[in-house]
Image: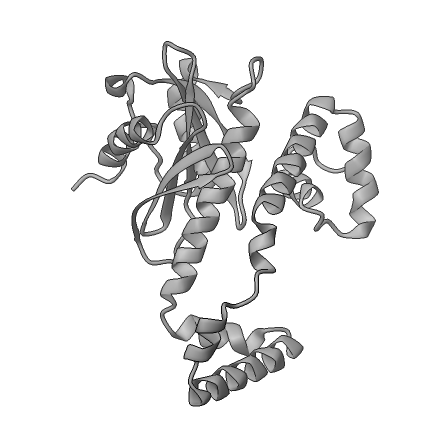
Length: 257
């Protein structure tokens, strides 16, 4: 059996990336833990919904006007770049990543920030409807929650105070991220609507990004990156303007001038 605390195995299982020899063990453990099995199934379903929503864009042909805009010399350069990328892939991508680490890549930072927003939206859609188990540690143990999550993420975290904009802390939980653990704080107003704050501490390779907004399915997300820390505030129940008001309150506390 796998270690029941191994979120890495569960995340890989949900994403279909777990080695074949581990799949049976994880499936057996989930059979004995129905709540975790339901959580993983919800994650799979939401990920599938997001993929189906945006998958069609990848198959759209390049517009003719853009193809005509490409000069022959630029086309040749693109062909050379594609050839080198293929060559690098054949070598396991080693040379490509060495070159990548030597040069700034603003696009990579933007891409990582967008991924931050997408995963935050999935986490919000997964946990915000929960009634019995919305969080792992409740607000009555806030000090313990922040200390625990700070230790796991390797950086000092804060749970912003959002009572001024109508939201109180419900609690938080630890989630698996792309490269390491992620903190997830949940807040609720007196009408019962919830917002969640998703925090990563592994954004070291990315430049800081400005305050941005996106919508993933029915979930709106304001997100930003500050050094190694990435933040995303999500809600599927309030307007963009109201979410902006809450996000601004969180931003001002997490990123003081």
